[in-house]
Image (tube, rainbow, N blue to C red):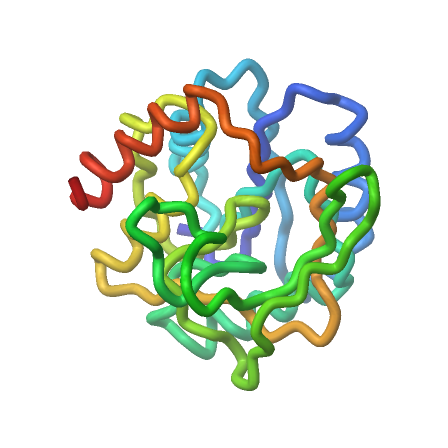
Length: 220
């Protein structure tokens, strides 16, 4: 394991979006003596399968992010490392999440939402501000998958063979192994998610929801 290496992992099906994502990453301040690598996964059958392919990389710190997630905080890596190195039990970080995951497994339907992110619903930039965090990070049960930073390698559940519920599932996996899942304190949002949020869900969403609730979380 290389303790001074950071790996960015992204599923890519839109090269223009990914170039914009990389442009923001290359603008980040790189911690002294650290190296940064990129893993772009194209033609992925599922996010969990794609992300599992990153586990063979020896980077201690892995950042799994969508191609449409743009990191705005130039100190993102410094802030991430400070939190991880100061809190060895903290295994997973996300920008937004819920203190209590609801019975349907959908984090934004949960109780006590925390964190901040700039979103793009209805083709309009909107700052989503949930409950303010007064400590360096807030412990949560699940985070959103727009960006997920880890300091430990835990396999992703590949029975989730699509593109939903991988984030809630991985949050559950870290908690099961005794690690904390957290959302950092942000004065202003650290990330922009250039994603057109919608409340419409197709049958694939509900198929994977059932798999998550029954197999991954054990609530059915």
